[in-house]
Amino acid sequence: KSLKKDSHEAQNEMGTIFSIVDETLKSTKVIKIFSAEKIMDNRFMQSMQRWINSSIRLGRKKELASPMSEFLGSVTFLIIAWYGGKQIIVEQSISPADFLVFLGIFFQILPPVKSLSQSISNVQKGEASLERVLEILDADVKIDEVAEPVSISTLNNAIEFNNIGFYYDKDHTILKNFSLSIPKGKTVALVGQSGSGKTTIANLLARFYDVSEGEILIDGVNIKHLKLKEYRKLLGMVTQESVLFNDTVYNNILMGKPDATREEVIAAAKIANADSFITNLPDGYDSNIGDDGGKLSGGQKQRVSIARAVLKNPPIMILDEATSALDTESERFVQDALEKMMENRTSLVIAHRLSTIQKADWIVVMEKGDIMEQGTHHDLIAKRGVYHKLVELQNFD
Image (tube, rainbow, N blue to C red):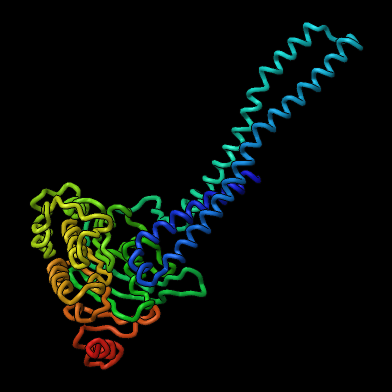
């Protein structure tokens, strides 16, 4: 148990060290601007010292196992030799030949017993590692399919949210009694302050989580009853943070449809207003974009993400504040690309900048998980309610 405890502590601390290194590398600009090098250095050194202490304790106990088994083996041999000699010389109850045979068997058994002590320490270390892995694998985030899921290949009629609720625990409700219908080919926008539940709705539609109450229907079928892989093929997603990989532009776009031709990739890039800047890169579509697309600007990364979604050509598109982190010029290019992509496509749009969703077929204004008002842009402006105030605030800004 002691070995297992120390091994678990060492594994945990190593995870903390890697986490600190990852945070530091990703946040170098923030660290430098706030002169926080010493703070991060202290965090790293403290974690490293804890790992060293745990590793030393673990090493001592592990290395002590072998000498201890040697010592116990020697003591056992002395006891056997004393007892056997007494039986031969004093009591003459066994013959010297029989005793030598017994000693031979004893020495054959001794090495495996010593190896067993070493194996036990390795098993304890392995159990600690297994516990760390199982903590992740057993986390309650897995989305399970029903026993006989329904196949799906496209969206024919509508997406429906029927009185859905979502909470992490009963005391912290994120959504409650949320109902909405998105007809095929229509664009519905969700607006509201941060924390109103907009992104949660997008995540529930993508089935990253399951609803706590109510149901989400695709053409009348609960998404819990659909084959998950087939359902996800119907979805495309562009988020505020462009997730790109350390690979070529071409391969990043190709992820949307691995069997696509080069012509299809280029066509998708053109729709996303990305072809013009891609062709100006040193190696064009074969240019490496670095970790997290670090060699591209924010607007360029977003357009590559859109091109990837365009190439997939899904019937349902989820846009989660896709332009909120961009400057005005980049936003214009990206917004134009998004409008091209959303033509005749069922879209759920989460918007921070209200200027980007004025053309939406339906706008839903949310606050703390509830729908405050809904309608077209012109209807909501005429109501002079929450939406009108949000528009006025942004116009003032």
